[in-house]
Image (cartoon, rainbow, N blue to C red):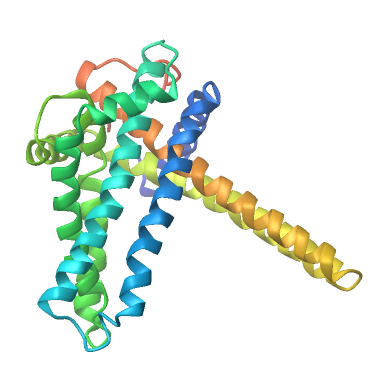
Length: 280
């Protein structure tokens, strides 16, 4: 197989994986509640920390021990609510993949039962997040920023299956991370293809929607500024809805990939798709 054929096969499979994830998600729209709750909680946490940070000028003189502790607390709270809601979504998605009919309460109850492990992993993610941000913010050193970006991408892929492990197995955060890395090594091709496929599909949809919506708003501004503002606002809300949908798609896919990696069987909704990287 030539390089071009292999690349075409990867792209084709990634689109199929994205469509299969969408099919499972569309069968239970309640799953979309979790990323919406996550987004609201993130905004609340952001406001809670941003207001005192600005009011007391905590970072006006650079970083100190106090400001670093404040920054870590912010990162921890952000990661905690995101991971908690993702665990709830993945728990509900696993029930759906097994043929059940999950409720929102089922998802949150499952996440609450693992709150200790979630908090531990949030602390790990917050620490790594602060380190990666410090590397990426080195404006005077392109190499360091490049290394930071590469490490960030590697971290994203290595932790792709942490949430399914946390909700499905009675293990701590470090063991969940190790399990995620081990399973990623076995399914690296489809993990990367799935993330890329979902990301590309949603990016194209957002690009088309944004161009159409804001383009229409510009044309209407020549006639009515109020109507242009209305169309612009609707477009922004539609883009936010797509972002929520993308988040849910990624979680459904991670749940399906985890189930396949553990059981060796393709979950419901993914029949006929190769979820494991071909062995050469």
